[in-house]
Length: 202
Image (cartoon, rainbow, N blue to C red; front, side, top):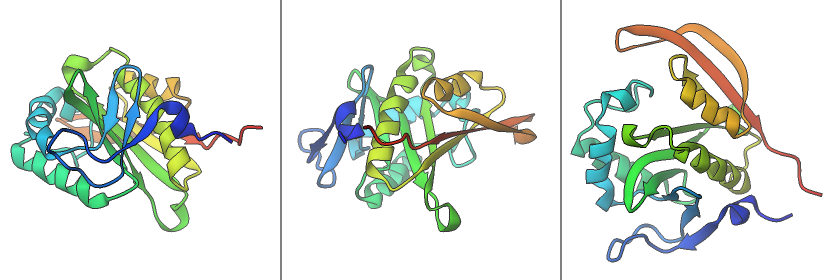
């Protein structure tokens, strides 16, 4: 069976920018509209410029801070570096700058075969198909790299664009928790999506 990540354009890269060493064996994924690669110290300014936006924050969980400061960027970059290999969290880079992020969280115990998937992108890059393209590549990488049988994601009810991203990438809507999300003085539903590992190719 041919590796999904190889088909998606994954390659091993010892570092990213000249003079900026990331951890050894860092993976870079080539999507059609972007490149997915590990976060590095040189990304802090791009992160703040893109992430420090209430429109972005409104669609994300409380883990994503607002305002988004240089300290937040430094802490996130350090956390990603400490995760080691295989890479779990990628920067979404378009035309040489970081415009978002995509990653997964491996669950434990009776859900050790499951991973939560999350992503975000700056407002100036909404509605361009960048996240859909990135998620397709990332899903292939996740199933090819990690011992997971299921990927899952949640979406706030007021964010139908994110729901469409998941659906375009094969995720199935599995449920709706009515009134489960309260943020920015508004209440909305929480939509649950899931995707099972595809069967092996013949």
